Image 1 (cartoon, rainbow, N blue to C red):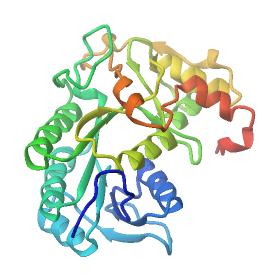
Image 2 (image 1 turned 180 degrees about the vertical axis):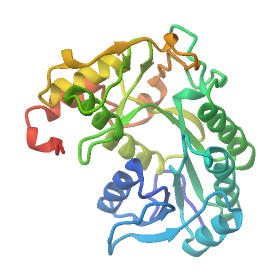
Image 3 (image 1 turned 120 degrees about the horizontal axis):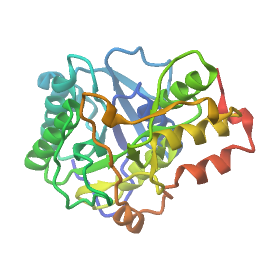
Image 4 (image 1 turned 60 degrees about the vertical axis):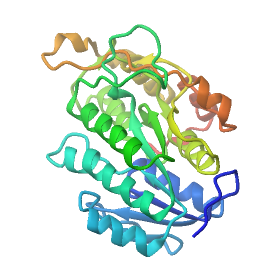
Length: 300
């Protein structure tokens, strides 16, 4: 099998975690661009879709990864599958990523791995660049950092994409739904004023990943939204865009809690902006584009 990383569009794309929030958007946009798409699922039943080839896959089982990817023979694999809090966190997010990278290298395919801004400790005041070393302080951050290290060792041509909070409207992402539940009074909780992220619209991220799949770039790349904001500010903007008064949201400080959390996870995205034609819009720009069209928000 031959692979051209010089800009020619790859035809066979495999997406791990295809039933996840990003995975579903990737499938839709990739098929629209003419990719031949296959995707994996684990705990969620995949939708009935005659254009997507679905595989049951446990990325924690390297034999299963080898069998599934060997059957489909992808040109590109976008690895989005992860666990964040449950007992399978390390087996899926850390070890599973290593399994995928190992098999992709053996097949001679192209790997794009989704990492996270929480690989950093969040203690600096300015933005993190691709050159800054990881220093995770949470279990999820440690799993993601381990995955990055393993991938760099076993799959030299991989792209490791660090990103931030991913949101969207069709359907609503978990964070947006949480904010709306708070402002509607169906849940009680706070949004932190002292945690800063660079939220990215899910379609912007998906399009950026598909564009990267057609480049020769290798290594780490920060792909996030162009606007830094606190979790509280992000929630307030989402509430306002959906027609709710953000005054009903309660703010808090993560430093008031015993569990240590990374506070400033701002990502420097200048390198990605110089490489990509896909715009990496900030939250304000995205909401300006969608706010005049309330039917787009699919609120439930």
